Amino acid sequence: MATISKRGDTYRIRVSAGYDLSGRQIIKSTTWKPSPGMTENQIKKELNRQATLFEEQVKNGLYVKQDMKLAEFSDLWFSDYGKAHLKPTTYKRYSDCMQRINAALGHIRLSKLQPHHIISFYNNLSESGIRSDTKYAALPDLANLMKQNKITQAVLAESADLSTSTVRQAVHGKNISASTADAICKALEIKKEKYFSVDQTKQNLAGATVLYHHHVLSSILTTAVQWQVIPSNPCNRVKPPEASKHEAKYLDEEQAAQLLSSLDTEPLRYRTLFTLILFTGMRRGEALGLTWEDIDLKNGIVNINKSSLYLPERGIFENDTKTESSHRIIKIPETATELLRLHKLEQNKDRLKAGDQWQDCNKVFTTWDGAPLNPDTASSWFSKFIKRHDLPDITIHSLRHTNATLMIANGTDIKTVSKRLGHANVTTTGNIYTHAIRSADERAAEALNGLFTSKKA
Image 1 (cartoon, one colour):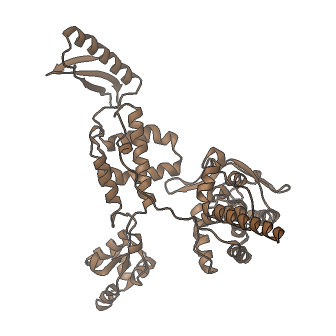
Image 2: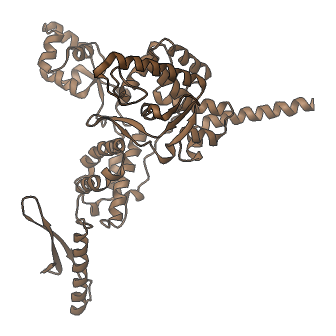
Image 3: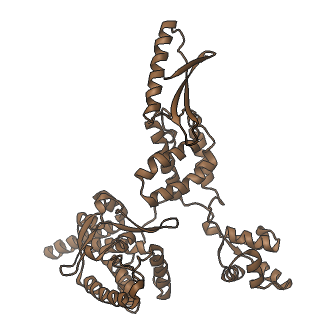
C-alpha cells in the first residue's frame, strides 16, 4: 500500500519493494507536483492515480528512479539488459567503452545530460593521450643512466617487479606499456617524460573507436527512453563522430599464391587452418569453432554454426556465430578437403601420443593435448608467420577479405559471395567490397568494348 505525504507544493509517494538480504525493508519513492489551477478534488483524484500507477511499477520491477545518474543507469542496463542480449565479446567491448564514458559523463543525472556534454566528450576522445594502451619507448638516456649507476637489467627487473625480458625490451627501446614504464621510473626514481618517449602513431583513438563509443552511449540512452526514465535520447541531437573509411586489407592472386606456398613448410595444423580460411572466407572464430561433425569430407561440405571465442575472465568458450545469417553450409575445394583429411590423421596420432592427457573436445583445430586452440594463439602464430616469410602486413581477417575479393574478381556474383561470407544482406557485402566490384565492373566494360570493337573491325 502506497503512503503519501505532502512536502510544500509537491507530494511524496512511498511504496515498499520487499526486503533485502539483511532483512531491511526496501522503500521506493517518487514525487508528484499538481499542475497549476487544479482543484482539491482533481488533485486528490490524480494523486491516487499516480500512487496506484507507481505501486504497480514497483511491484512489476518496472520503476527506475528518475534522478538516476548515467553511471547508475549504465550499471542497471548492463545487469538487466546487457547480459541477456549482448554476446560476451560485445558485452566486454561495451564495458570497456563505459569506463571512458562514465569517467567523463557518469556523474551527470540522465535528466540533465545535454548534447553539449556529449560533444565535449567526443572531442576529448579525439585528443592525444586518451588511449589506455598508449605505448612508450625508452630514450638512450635510460641505458646511460643504468650504466653510470651500475644497475643491471636483472637488478632493475627485481626492483620494478618485472620480468628480465620485459626490462631488456625497454632498455633496447622497444615499445612498452604505460604501466611498465611507470614501474621502471618508480624503481629508478626518475621522471617518465625525461627518459621515455610516447609512440606518436598510437596516441589518438581511431575515428571508428570514437564512433563506437557513440553507439554504446546511444544504445544505453535509447533504453532509458524505452524505460520512460528520460523523454528523449540526447545522442539523437548530436552529429555522430566521423570515422574515416579504410579499405579492407587483402592479398592479390600472386600474394595469395605466395602465402599458400609459404604454408607448405609450416606445421600441418596451421597450414590447414589458414588454407581453409582463405578458401572459405570464414571468420577466425568460426574456423576454430568447427567440430569434425561439421565437416563432410566425402562431399567437401562445411556446416558453419558456432564460433570459438576467448576472454581472459572466461578462457576459451563456444558461442553462436556473429549473426543468424552466419549459420551457413558451404562447399570447399578439394585442396582444403585433402588437407583436412591429412590433419585428421595427424590429430589421431597426437591423441595416441597424449594418452590420458588428451582432452576430447572433438574440435578440428586443437593443441597437442586435444584442447581447443586459443584464437589469440592462432593470431599470434599468423603474425609471426607473415613476418618470417616477408608477406604483406595482414591479419587473419584479411584472408576473409582476400577470399571475397578474389571471388568477385573472378566473376562470382555478389549474392553468392554474400551468402558464402554469411553477411546479413547483399548491401553489407557491396559496401565492404566496393573496390573489388568497381574493378570487376571496369573489366566487364573493357571486355564488352573489345568484343564489339573487334566485331565492327
